[in-house]
Image (cartoon, rainbow, N blue to C red; front, side):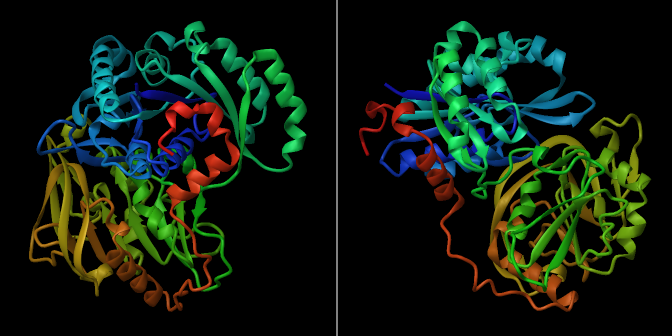
Length: 507
């Protein structure tokens, strides 16, 4: 029989995604056929993967389940995340069921009209996974103790029930009040789900574990639930699931490896209100001597500490038109046109770099037909209601900010609308994208995961900034983020308690 463990939490951002990925790699390394699963996810960070049970075509899932599939060493399909809600703003989300967008819903309408269909899809996907795997590691969402949502909590309560899952509850001590949060969560869980709890774990701990022991002993006495792990505050480097990891709108944050390199470059990214697929920037932030700055459009090109950006990347967005209008209101276009470093636009950012967007009311901004872009690329985008979701390979002919890069690159496209040139312009991906000497736009998500593209872009950025690029030779050799997540879990979680020998007997 398939064993299912639901990794739930006392709140959002407590480490569920990391623990699931770590468990998947830990079990896969021991010969266990393991698959991740998240019945319902809410994120604008999505990946295009094969549609389960279909010979062709691609659909969307949350990035965390794509990452967890890689940790489990299996191919990701839409069964791993059968229900995806992609926030559009103003309380509305696009509903994606088994990879396909089926409509836009406000939350109350979704629960009235779409939730039952979503549950049926989740059960169907789970059952397919269960037939093909020894273990399913399910990820919950937010808190499992939201008593106002218990009757429609698909990712937590319903998953525990239809998957006959054991439950591991995570609690983030970094937030403070960890024991109260854990105690309250266990008290507020539905009784039948509470009976499924096999343990609890404290995450993001700094310091001497011995200081926790009196609290652990008391919480175990009061609840009868064993604390089976205390995980230290370590980031294995997995891509972020949602924008919780980014600064709030109006604030600034800097991402990049801690190093001693003085010859750094700064890549500016405007913090869009509806930012999507910002994991596209993580491969850049992981390079030595590179800092990726997310900040308000009014200040990000000169971020307030006297420093100036060396390059700009306009990221994807769930709603290009609304984010473009906000950037216009902040006079970001004037600042961008005055900027003399390399500029790359990804997906929605590519559309913004063009002359204009037509048929703009498709995105729901009333009857406004045309919205002007920033005019840095001689292209025009026309929106349509048809959504393109596809895994792709392209032949990159390096031009502009990617000059010097030649070879095949791969990634995925998730977008609405088609972008066409208004005059002769360099096409870096054959018939896809557009480029001038200073600006490049493409629909290819995952561009910088391709080494040839990443190396070419950073070579241009360092050269334009007149700085020597660190070679990274003094970096400590490391394993993959999946291996680091597995070590984090196996070193600090009592996996033998969470998974009795029957679940790991293939090890």
